[in-house]
Amino acid sequence: MTYPQLKPQEYTIFKVLLEHDYYISTTGIAKLANVSWNTAHKYLNTAFSKNWIAKTQTGNRSYWRAYRKDMARRSRLQKELIIKGN
Image (tube, rainbow, N blue to C red):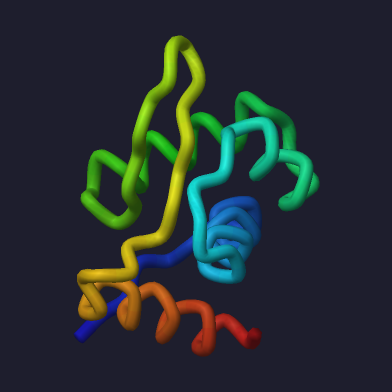
C-alpha cells in the first residue's frame, strides 16, 4: 500500500488535528500549526474532499476534526505521520 506524500504544512496540520479530539476552527488550526489561514484552509478543504477529515459549519466558520469513529481512516493518517518521523 502506498501512502500519500504530505507537504510539510499538510503534515503539521494533520498532526494538530490528530492531537486534539474535538472540532477546531480554521483559525485555531492555523495558529497551532504555525501556518497562514489561507494555507490551513486550502489543505483542510483538500483533505475534506478526500474524506480524510470531518467538517462542520456554524455561520461562516468552519470547524475541523480528525475522524474518530472511522478508525481505518485515522490509522492510515497516523501511519503516514509515523512514517514521516513523528
